[in-house]
Length: 262
Length: 257
Image (cartoon, rainbow over all chains, first blue to last red; front, side, top):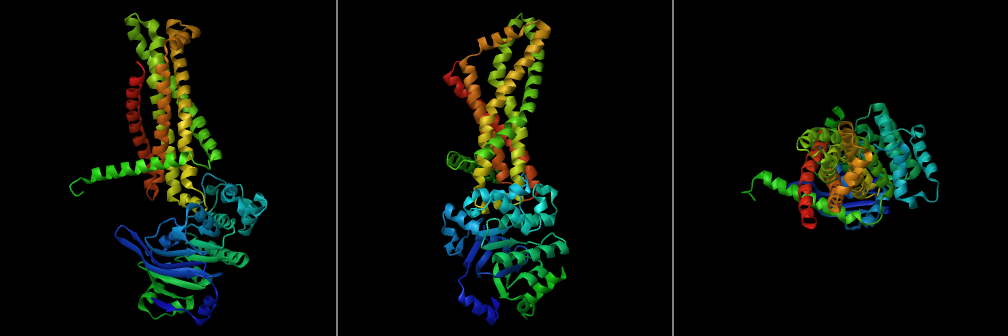
């Protein structure tokens, strides 16, 4: 593994306890080993971007973190709890602390925007913290600039609006960590930039940490504190954007060239 | 394993998965918390929204059956037995099977397509990461709604079908409403009504569980959603006849048919 970590990052990490810690994670689909011993840490108020070609195991890694997929070997510790060992109740509790923004937004088709945001709140009334449900919904929509869309159905929203509503739904439980699965994929450059700015604003206001999977190098450059390159299921390289973009390793160079040429 | 043809292995694997899915339903169906609101909503969609289709099909079937059978009964001088014949055949077999087949087409395909679409667009995953049990919210509620509403739909089809039959009898044979239905209720035995009602619950279970299984396990892509809806109808229709056969067989043991 190529590690180009600057001293500043190292020092700041030494002082903090990681929110997410992955050790030697392995995942197989039949005889195909998709993740080959991944190690990763996410620290408070940090944005880590995971880059890699299609099929390199990025989405699988993200899904393993919230146990949408089970792991075959290795440890996943999120907020001090070992994810594979949790019972359903404990897992549901941890999931309220970890927001997940899906690639296709995954809004519930049969519900209005209001109902989409109300759904997680009704499941976890303890997360309302005594606040009025309607107010929480409106605040979440306001934070993504879509308070006017409250009574619309997902089918009436554009791709960018859907992504923002999904983000509002993720934020409504006030998670400590947000997992983004290709947040800007399929969006035009202007809308993609709006989403990136929104992600930065959220991190700023709510002090969240984020693990972001993306193919969008602009997104990675703007948002990442640290970047990880996955290559064929292996944690191949790690560092800041500027470190990795200047890295002399031929595979990293080829990767940057290929992504930037898209 | 290598000596067993792949199709048989696939069939056994599918049967195993389906049995596991059904077992999972029974395990969670009686366990708290219950999703009452969603279940009532599904009862409305499955029951109320299917009522017109089921009733109109039953009505037409009542008309057609009477028109087809009447000449033969007249030829044998048995036209007075028309209400008996139509009543028994409708309550025992035509009503439940016709309703179940209509519902397999309408409800089974819609559940298969809806859950399939939710699966491929990661809505089920989104539900799970928000700390909701999607199986309980989506599957248990829909299957319960099918089990509860199917008998009501069967009763509706029976009533409207018999009314259709009465209309023809009234036009062709000048039989009064009172006479027709008195004759129907006189001839019907508990052994006709109870097995028909009980098997309607099982028909509901089959339609719900097959639709949910196919949708919940839909493969990626729009083709997968289409296939889920299609196979939900095909498999449910086939299983309905198997269940019907066993229901008649068991009823034959307990009641003199």
